Each structure stands twice: as structure tokens, then as C-alpha cells.
Amino acid sequence: MRDLKGIFSALLVSFNEDGSINEKGLRQIIRHNIDKMKVNGLYVGGSTGENFMLSTEEKKQIFRIAKDEAKDQVALIAQVGSVNLHEAVELGKYATELGYDCLSAVTPFYYKFSFPEIKHYYDTIIAETGNNMIVYSIPFLTGVNMGVEQFGELYKNPKVLGVKFTAGDFYLLERLQKAYPNHLIWAGFDEMMLPAVALGVDGAIGSTFNVNGVRARQIFDLTKQGKLAEAREIQHVTNDLIEGILANGLYLTIKELLKLEGVDAGYCREPMTAKATEAQLAKAKELKEKYF
Image 1 (cartoon, rainbow, N blue to C red):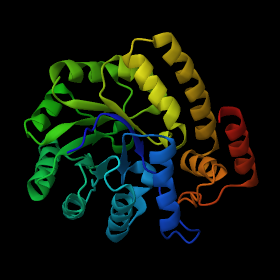
Image 2: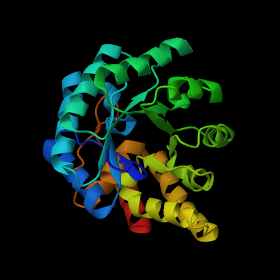
Image 3: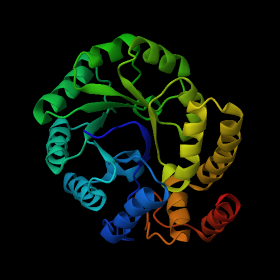
């Protein structure tokens, strides 16, 4: 298994206007992340990849393309989580056979699953695939909140390496870091990377890294070196950029920024707004000129 620490892009996926996967564009996004953003790895099949609007076969296609394009140049994490446990297991087996370094799975959502049900979900995926696991905790989207003791229960499975922590509860983050120092934490909110790294996280996984990976690396490295004033200035610029992206449409705007870099980032998958308006295109160009 490759080193899973550092900067990981939550991989965007290029779609054609009819919603089908644009393989050429997806390969270009992967190359941009590896060659220009210089990321340590790719987190494939997450929210940023519009994953929860895709069929099982489409998810497999993306895993296959990403592995084929990246080869062994960077670490690869496959997000296989689903409300359908059978699908999660099927995807986990497939990604493991492809040679992904690790699996990740979002906590099961929509239904109010009990904690024993959540633990069973992770233990089953691990048992069926034999691969290592990163818990993907994103409470503001899933409604699933877990405390220190519950994470400890999940961590009793030796193949659970840690958590992708996409939450603003930095008290919980600090408690987890202190309670389980041998388990890894990846920060999931790009706009709060500096305080997360200051608290000792091992890496970060972010959607804006597809275009802002160089600054993300600078924030990560400078904070680790204790150069907080320098890191803070770069975080200020990063957050100004993120504010502009969010106001203009998150995934759509990142794709338009990639297009301005010559990457065929394609469209979003409906029911998201697939195609940018003239106003959104103009704003993306403005962001490109100002921040890149």
C-alpha cells in the first residue's frame, strides 16, 4: 500500500452533455491533477465525482479509467459507500481487484441507521473485500453524527485506517487525534485546512484541489513547518477563491476553471445544472484571471 498522507484531490468527473461519461475528459482531469497540481493521490468516487447519481456500472467505469490513467504514479482511494450494502461490496471488490490502495465509504445515509447497523456496514465491506478502509464522515450531508467512543468501536477493526473528516467540529477532531494517535485523519473542508493541519491531521481530501492543489500543498507544508503567518495568507486567498466558486456553483465552476486551463472537464450530471449560463461563464473567467 502506498503512503496515504498528504494532498488528495477528490476527483471530478467529466460528463458529456447527454450525461454519459466523457472518458477523454476524465483522463485529462486525472493528468492535470497528477502533472500540474502535483497531488499525492486521488479520491475516486466521492461526492465531487457526482457519484450518488451514477449507476453501479458507471462507477466501475470511472474506477477503471482512473486506475488505467494514473497507473502507480499516485495513491488511489476508492469511495465505494452506498445505501445499498450489496453495491458497496461489489464496488469494493472491483476496486480492490483493480489495485486501489485503500477503500473509503460514506456512512450509510437517508434512513436513520443505528450505530450497530453502521458498524455492521463497515465490517461487512472490509470482510468481503479484504481491503483497508477509511470512514467518510460528512454529517452535514448524511445526518450521521458519531462521537469519540463510536469511532473507537469502528477502529477496533484493524483494517479501518482512519477517517475523512468533513465537518466543522474541530473539538471532535482534536479529541479523535488525541484518543487514536495511530489512526489517520484527512481534513475534508478545503476552507479550513490550516486549523485542521495545525491540529495534526495527516492529509486533506478536497474538491477545489482539482484547480487549487498548488496552494493547498503550500498551506499544508507551511503549517506543518510552523510558518503559520505565511500559511494564513495563502488560506485567505484560497478562501476568497472558494467563496467565489461556491457563489457561482461548486462543481460547475471548478469544471469551467479547468476548461480555461485547456482540460475537457465537460458538464455536470443532471439533476444538477449541467451547463453554465453566460453569467456563470463570465464569473469563472473573472476567477481565473484573479486567482490563477
